[in-house]
Length: 389
Ligand SMILES: *[C@@H]1O[C@H](CO)[C@@H](O)[C@H](O)[C@H]1NC(C)=O
Ligand SMILES: *[C@@H]1O[C@H](CO)[C@@H](O)[C@H](O)[C@H]1NC(C)=O
Ligand SMILES: *[C@@H]1O[C@H](CO)[C@@H](O)[C@H](O)[C@H]1NC(C)=O
Ligand SMILES: *[C@@H]1O[C@H](CO)[C@@H](O)[C@H](O)[C@H]1NC(C)=O
Ligand SMILES: *[C@@H]1O[C@H](CO)[C@@H](O)[C@H](O)[C@H]1NC(C)=O
Image 1 (tube, rainbow, N blue to C red):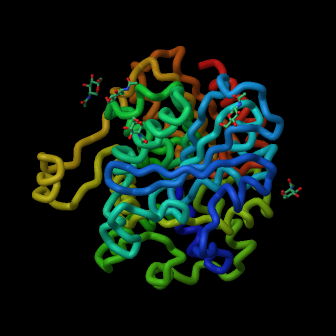
Image 2 (spheres, rainbow, N blue to C red):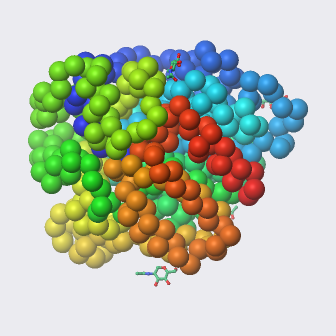
């Protein structure tokens, strides 16, 4: 999860990202690697204009378009679609899928460098940031599935990492998008967060840094912004070595990262999210449940939810026959083994032949997207799953 990247980047300010003029992910990242790519945009019901990239061919084109199944890739918190594209082509999930005959769609969450437009609001308006992952589950996920379904005429396979898992689970549990879904895979799944072990994240959530940022009127959450740099500063001096160690300190002891891949990664990440989103996640760590954003007082909750406490998501509502694939790691400090087991226990009534669970004992949070051996360890079993359903 990207808490991680937020704190990781406290540290990595010197390496951090340019928010300069964006040519688009296709031009900057995908085409230089020898793949065809199309830029798409779509608008959510609440007005956010999101960019998506489509890689509809592998390096060796397959004969017909009709057999190509769409796969939608949804990144985690404070990351963006580029996180699926950073390892070399033979190792990055997006390219591996395209080379295996899938029609790959990469989404970029509202607020990231590639999705900072809205029909009426500007990112400098606090209103642009008045959302948490509730809205991603409510608006973005259903719109993404509908868009890909419209474009391809096919039901959508989904792969989420980290927060990208929670928003799809929440959406499905509310009867949204599930009927447009062929199958769904969850890497480093995030839902119940009460066993999270990573000390820096726990300190940040206990001290409610996010809440503090709200009081200070900071709506956009990115540690690279001066106001937040001032809030939390001076954790590490050496941008290279300490950054690398810090990534592991926050996300768990990743087994198989390549330091030049991490440096490339840090040229694109972290990305912005909303401060409210960070507060919502801190509430989950504190309360141990999967509920909607708590406005902090009964009257305000009553206005939004017609009840004084935020309603809980009910994972048992996910259609029982939806094919699901989970992959989680033994060293993942953000997607803790006990929390994942709790999530799976909530899916107890799911059809047993429709649920596949993979446990990778030496993996931590970032290994699932950047590890040098992720293709063999996770993506090949994942592709078997996608082809089976
Ligand atoms: C496949 O789709 C591409 C782009 O949508 C199109 O240019 C091409 O002609 C199609 N190929 C076949 C075999 O239908
Ligand atoms: C999908 O297509 C329908 C019918 O053309 C259209 O009303 C809807 O807005 C489209 N959805 C998206 C997300 O583009
Ligand atoms: C999927 O469900 C939505 C809302 O429940 C509904 O509007 C839509 O028609 C359904 N689509 C299909 C293909 O069944
Ligand atoms: C790390 O990645 C770089 C760039 O892709 C590559 O040249 C190098 O061989 C990799 N190192 C290892 C140990 O995999
Ligand atoms: C959750 O949903 C399941 C199945 O739809 C239902 O049986 C159960 O009562 C619900 N639990 C709560 C707490 O609402």
